[in-house]
Length: 318
Length: 318
Image (tube, rainbow over all chains, first blue to last red; front, side):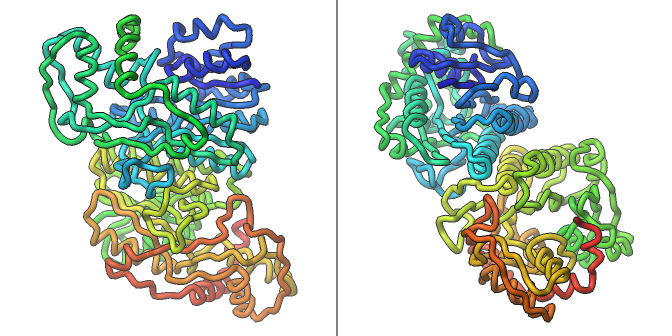
């Protein structure tokens, strides 16, 4: 099978490329390297079955040409910066909504039959039901990031209905692990490196969040891709746990061997549009036989280990 | 109060302008006349409190300038062509999703505090619950039109959360009445004028649909605007009835005094992405005191009357 991975040089995208190549697949990676890292593709590039196209999803001609001959698109590319969406509202529209439309049009031009889409558990907004199932009550979007993912989901399922594309949509909790380059573990690690004596935590620290290790995320995507035959399949991905922000802050500090004092900015939410409790029901993907290998604490700790061994990622990003 | 109406020369937009002007408001109408009709603004133009700006929502500079000084935006402009979305997929993205983003950005630039958005009952897809409430289970989108409306809703509520805009979202059933220029009454009327002996009906004719008269739609919007103070308010709009496509076809034929034979194209759906049963629960807006004045049959018949008195609309549109 030949796969086309958008955001191939990104955190999840590059892990997915490696997993596909390990299974003997052919992979074309597409990335504009705005946030992706060439370092993440060092493994993939060793395979003769991998090829890389440097390009932007807004460059429709380049995208359509690069996708030629692919059978499955794994659309991982996105502006994944939830927190600062309000500072540059056009970014989610362009890099997520319009980019996803362009991916769909390129698929149509190339007669690609299947798309896997990286959506987010944030689409549930401030969920009325927790743990939140895939058919939770119609949510009200609170962030431009989640709004752009809902927009992407809607276009994808409409293409499934209208053009016979098979669509698999994955609503992730926050993903952790090797090649993780943004999020709270990244921020806390960097802050504690600079000043191990104190740690500023957004909100009151009681926000309850879920995390999933990237290897478990990738295994779920590949399992669903192999086993689901529906026109549209939607799966929540997460572990059966959640933790408070203060708990994970403590795990990070312990793993780093430091004992900071926590300072809280206050309030139930870390930022405007933050969801104070994210916990997804994952019965649907589990019924397919998926079991995550790593718990939340292990995921956090492995992420700290990886960051400690790859401090160059802090140089790269501001 | 000063209002800014997008799609002011359209079916619902022009009716809204008239109602606002009758209440003493100031109105700036904005339209690119791609489907709007100057004839619909003849009444409005008689008022010194009305001004018209011919412009496109994709022209961000013109839009922001035109909106200057407005207090409330009523965003009615849209590509409303649900059925042919697959023939030009980019249209819903541009004229609905991107256009709505541009409206929000123009509001931010002009510090406009309130937006009313014309969404659609189609956002519920093939609804699991009928009559469908506003918090129905998270739907799967089946048309690019509805997908673009969900995208618009998501951006609007995110702006409400992030920038303090007050958002009122109205999910309409199909609207009928004076200045109606597209939809099944339009198509059936035109067809029966050409050939009163037979009528081709898409699907098996058993699709169950809801309709609302435009005056009732406008009164609901204005009532909610006056009485709702929440950051985000979402209202279904429709009557407490539905009818089968064959029933309304018969009402139309009877009203025209013709007795056609019905020919069915077959299948449960009229077109790819069509929803075979649309019926919305409207408890939320009714609790505010709203009662529709017209039933479905009356709405259909008044629409036939209006089309008969305004056959120029068939010349205008292909």
